[in-house]
Length: 163
Image (cartoon, rainbow, N blue to C red; front, top):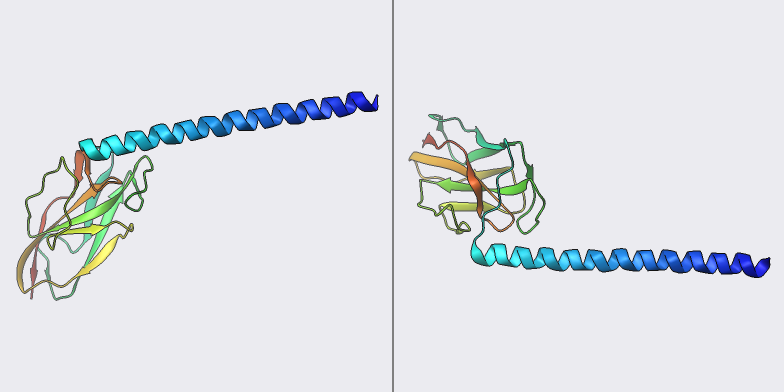
């Protein structure tokens, strides 16, 4: 009887270890496929589909506001989540702020320039030092590789005046 119980325990342990190994092997296979897909998406510039119903907007300042510097710009988002750049989680991305209407290609990763500000750590606001005068601001929400979603998730362009 003792030997039968030991054999059943050993068999159960072996079956359990085999199941864990199979799960681990499948997880490793899935991770390799995902990494290959990510590399292809990045190299080929394949846009991530936009989360359904997502909207991006500037909370403040408001269009037409006259402000004094430095200017606090607060970002708004609904229908999606924030994740740092490089983190691929469905339905998430991070903000980019266009200052003074730069030309950008929405089918490619956004460049990092003085006029295209990246917020890849998941920031939802920034303080800008702008020269006195009129300025435009617009948010673009992008995926893990800094590429705008398809269709693009952009805020309305606002114009502010800095005193």
